[in-house]
Length: 370
Image (tube, rainbow, N blue to C red; front, side):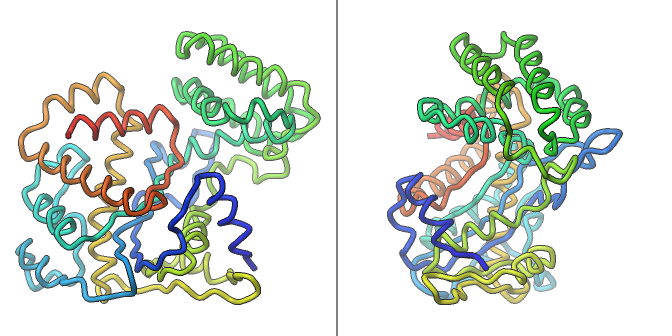
């Protein structure tokens, strides 16, 4: 049983959200769902984990006709296409995908229909590694450090993803996240060695702040989120992000793609809102639900965007941005317009578990398209 207010009240207060009680019809699809990411003897079971995204389109009010037939006609989809997918509109990685005229047609249609874009974007490695900082702050309970929590997470992630092979070997040696009490000091000491070897990656103030926090951690009695966990399992599933949306937008109708793993995960949960059972979500087969088909394309694009951002050096991002062809520039501008308008409607439509550096890179890449 899930008390939705125990989840949503914290999220609302932490982010200053004001419009999550409004009524929306919210459609979902997902991309890059590797389901379970764990460490094997030869490294990760997923060689290069991509940015997971669940999201899609939304509009105010209850479910309505989306004029999907007009979109199909504008895209000139063949009658044999019963279930529109990303590949029917564009193909390839993010920059290649931007070069499709059909994508421009699709994005303009979303804009002209007044539809919003919503998403939860998750870097799975960042999500798993930042438990180190959360554990330290939870145990140390120094309020003055909490204001730096996002920066500390960003800086720790920066030094650990620099040479990911070395990081995976470190995590494997300590059965991360099940480090345990006996090995916690040794684990933190090795993290500090990583930091000292890569001090040039961080500004001096950030380096000293993170070093000080790791020194504190070596003497703590516990690291609460790194004990009694499944050994070597970095991501067990992405189910909590579906739960988060259901709880946060309690008055909205959530229409999910009929995906068995997610369906099974939510089937075992009962959502309760102030004593009453909340039934605000359902599953639909994508070929019967236009909103889910429409969501497939935008989720595929957003997923490729964040994966491109997190896997590309800053200098290469600048070079790519400066070399975009006119078609790519138009599509990037339309994407930015949609994302901006959606955030103006409801800031909660954009949710991310990404490092500050990657969020800044993403913002800069989009901003230059204005």
